[in-house]
Image 1 (cartoon, rainbow, N blue to C red):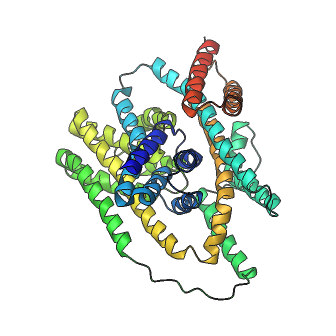
Image 2: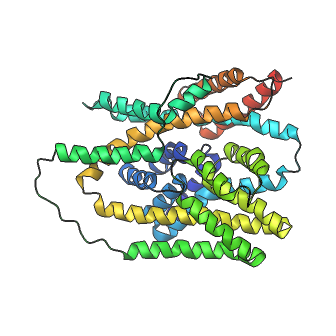
Length: 433
C-alpha cells in the first residue's frame, strides 16, 4: 500500500507540474521516480523510455503506466497512467467550459503566462541534457555521441530555429521523431552486422508468453468501456463515432504532442469542433496547461462536442470522459504490447545498442522541444506592443534566471514555476501598457 501511495503521489505531482508534455516530461518523471522516490532503477526507467518512444500515443502516460506496472503490478499499471493524464485533462475541460465566457483580456494573460512556462520547461530539459553529457564524458565515443545529439537537433528542429530567427531561403531537411527512431534502429542493425560481438554463441529466444499481453490489454478495454458508458447513454451513436475517431487519432499519434494537433485537425475539424474553437481556444489551453497534449486535446474536443450534441455541460463532461479514456487506453494498451515484446527481445544485440544510445537521441529531441516551445510562445502572443524579439529576450532572460535559481539557489520546481509565472505576467503587462 505504501508503494501505491508513493506511485500515485508522484504521478499526480508530475501531472500537475509537468508542463510541455511528450519528451519534455522524460527528465521530470526520472527525477521523481528514479532519483527522489527510488520507485524503480535507472535501467528499468530506460526500458520504459525505449518502449514508449517506439509506440504511438501519450508518451508520459505510457511511461507512468510502465513505472506503475514495475512498482505495483497491474493495479499500478492502471493507476499510474490515469494519475499522470488526469490533472492536465481535467484542467483543460474545466477551462474550456468557461473559456467562451471569458473576455479577451483574460486570454491575453494566459498568453503572457505561457512565456514563463516556456522558460521553466527549458530549465528542466537542460538538466536532462547536462546529465547525459556527464554520463558519457569518459566514454571513448563521447565526441561521436555529441555529434549524434547535435545532428538529431538539426534534422528535427533546424527549421524551427530558422523560423524563430525569421530567416528564409535556407533549405533544411525536416525529420520527425519516428524518422529519427527508424534511423536509430537501422543504424543499430548495421552496427550489429559489421561489428559482431566476440561471443559467437547464438542465444535462443524464449517463447513469447501472450498471457500478460492479453490480460493487460483486457484491463484497458474494460477501462475504456466503463469510462465511455456515460457518453454512450447521453449521445448514443455520436459518442461511439467520437470514440472510434479518438482511438484512431491516438494510434496515429507519432512524433510528440505538436504533431498530434495536426492529426486532430484532420480527424475532428470541423465535424466535431469548429476550426475557430479548435485553434483560438483549445490549442491555446493545451499549450499553457501541464500534461500530455494528446490527453488534453481529446478531452477538450470531447467536452466541446458533447456540449453541442447534448445541449448542456453534463453532456460535455460525459464526452470529455470518453475522450480521456480513449487517449489513455489506446496509449497504454499499445505501449504494454511493445513493452512485453521488448522484454522478450532485450537480450538481442540490436536492442542492447539502442539502450546505450537512446538517452543521446532523447537529448537531441529535447533540444527540438525547446525550440518548439520558444516558437509557440512567440506565436501565441497577440499583443502588438510585444514584438517577437521582445518575447524571445524575455524567454531567455527567465530561462537564465531559472538556471541560476536551480543550481545556485537549489530552488524546487514549484518555486521556479511560480517565480516564472509571476515575472512573465508582470513584465508583459508593464511592457504592453
